[in-house]
Image (cartoon, rainbow, N blue to C red; front, side, top):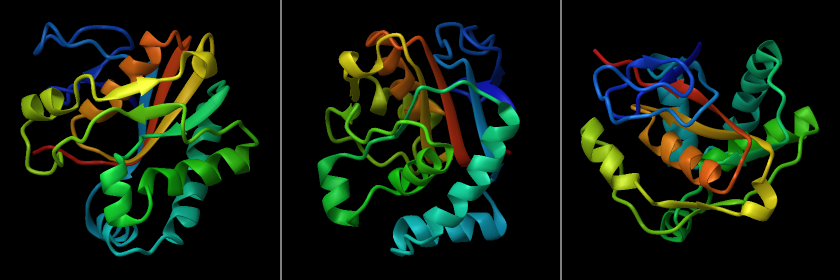
Length: 193
């Protein structure tokens, strides 16, 4: 699906425009896409990858993302995963976004970096938070290495997007480090009722 989303309310936005619902909210993406709806078998499989240590699913899911990206025909200089905090990586043993992003970069023969975008502080889990709480939770939580992103077109990959707050905070850090353009791609989007 091709769209950008307001990280506060989830409304679809044109690139670099404000949300009519949330006038102070700007999308930091050229485009923000997802492969499928976060429900049914896809939701179960993502949970197996994320919480059940079924890391092989990352390879399978990455193929779907590659096919989707090839249809989009974005021009990308660097692929990065949404970073986890050191505490979450220690707890889980891996970053589920890295399980997707690394094989995507490999298949597309695009440069990849796990340390270009970093989480600067521990944040509360976004699960169960409102859109406003999600945004506040991740504001200023990321840092990007200007030497690696300046004047580049960056693709940020994550597993699931609910409101887009985390992705938008990542994109903001990349833009502040002078990335030329930032694109976002997730495996799934939570469908709000």
